[in-house]
Amino acid sequence: MNKKKLIIILVIVIFAIIIVAAIAGQSNNSQNEGQSKNVNIKKKIIYHIGDTVHLGKFSFKLKSSKVTDSVGAYGFESNAQKGNIYIAIVWKYTNLSKKPVSAFSVPSVHLINNKGDVYSSDIGATSSYATEIHGETNVISNINPGVSYTGIKVFEISKDYLNKNKWFIKVKNNGSKALFEISVFNDNSSK
Image (cartoon, rainbow, N blue to C red; front, side):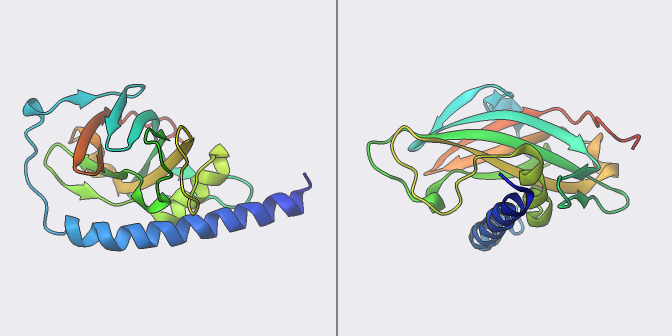
């Protein structure tokens, strides 16, 4: 595939991710406002990278997390603002039902800390990260039974908060919830 076609495909994918993230963010933001409270982690089952959980009509597997100052490739790079850092995550979800499921019904994913502070993803950085990992993200089509896709999100947080908290990925779908503990080792802070 030539470079021009690749760039056109990447722009279309990024545009689609932005649209879906904006729609999902509008509904999730109103639900998450003012929800800063201590999370009693000891009373919850904590999953880790590589674990698979069943949430509603989906299975969900957190594949990786990375702490970095920048994400992206092919001229679509994004850098965290001065004093901030990115936490980038990759997961796989599979439709376990016997019918197609709307792309708007996939599990919601947020970053939270042990204090209960909820973080939404950075849409621009997430789009940039998509170019870096060459994900197979589905943003518009229904997900057919047995079909799996890769999801990604990038969250921007203050560097000051990074090592002062434990960090978790909170996943929700159809009333089911799961928490995945993630490592916050900064793999390229010296760049």
